[in-house]
Amino acid sequence: MSAISPGAFRRPTFYEGQIISAADLNSVVMTAQVAIAQHERYLHLPGIAEGLQIEGIERTTSGGETYQEVTVKPGLAVDGNGRHLAIATAERLSEDLFDDLGVAINDPLAYYPVFLSGRDETPAASGAPTSGCRGSAPTRIVEIAVIGFGRVEDAADPNNVVTADVTAGPGGDAGTAPWRVLLGFVQWNSALKRFSAVTSSHDGISPAYAGVRADEVVARGGKLALRTAPRTVSGNLAVEVEGGATGELRFGAQNSSGNIVPVFTVNAKGDLFAAGKISGAVPGGAQFQTGSTFDGMLLALPPGVTQAQVDSGAVTLQAHVTPHYGIPALPPPAAPHRWLMTPIECRVVDRRVYCRVRWTRTDTNQIQEMPGVCDYTLTAFTKA
Figure 1 (cartoon, rainbow, N blue to C red):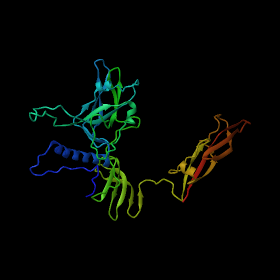
Figure 2 (cartoon, rainbow, N blue to C red):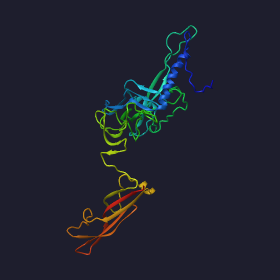
Figure 3 (tube, helix red, strand yellow):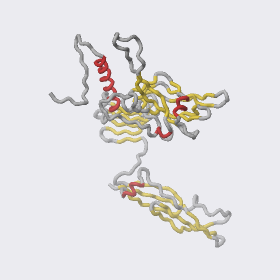
Figure 4 (spheres, helix red, strand yellow):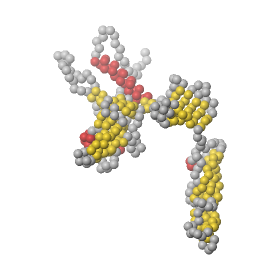
């Protein structure tokens, strides 16, 4: 018999006539709880699974001042340790709790993160003792989802840490730091002791939504889709891969029926179809950019060509510039006199245009030198 790993579960099993203890029954519950937590922790990404939108309703005080009454809608989230956080009914954010936490700073425009976290609570035992020699004990553990607040800086770093113990349950024990799931942000009016604004995202930070950790996804019906919104929401982008000998990869916006209207398609033979133009650096090819520009400006690179490619030598540029006569190369504003333009310089150095012209009045010897306008053709050659 091989040695038993220290992390191996000892799943309880029972037989007829066995006297089952509380520890035996608890181990059945714990085995299932740990298995679910491991699945959520290692095969999914933490975040909001459903609902939990944060919304504000404008209210007015007896003094005529407005504030926001903020509520969190019902929903479900999964934290990074695999714990389910459920809000069954809409819950109003507590102004008293926010004030007691002391997270507010002296900035009326500051936004404070709203978090959802979970913990276990053991209610006080009730009922008669189980026997004359034993006291009563709790028969339930309440898994609570708690809405709280953080400091301004906590939104970017909520200090969440995944447990290092792969055999651990979903956490929530007293004395351990809870995992905080971001729901949104609120502003605080310190004078009214009320919330003044609410938003789902701030400063580039938004709530995370539950995801999947996987290196391979297999379609059972021969078609696999990746959508940016539910299929019932038209206009959002989606990617679809269809199998078979004539299979296709399609990209486009989905219609009201959830079907993709492709703007880009690749079939199993490698044939490419695009509704729009294809831009980018083609190996061994050349791309062109033309237009007009002014003295001191940088020539625009062709679409798909970057300065990094030029700097690395992957792309070589060749520019041709000629002075532009007429509009927009207007003479000095001295109507009704006539002016004659003579180019002084027209060149390009590292994409920078140097274009100077001399204007001479035809009826006098008056001369003015001014920045000029030039027409250009920029060719980008990409290495094969």
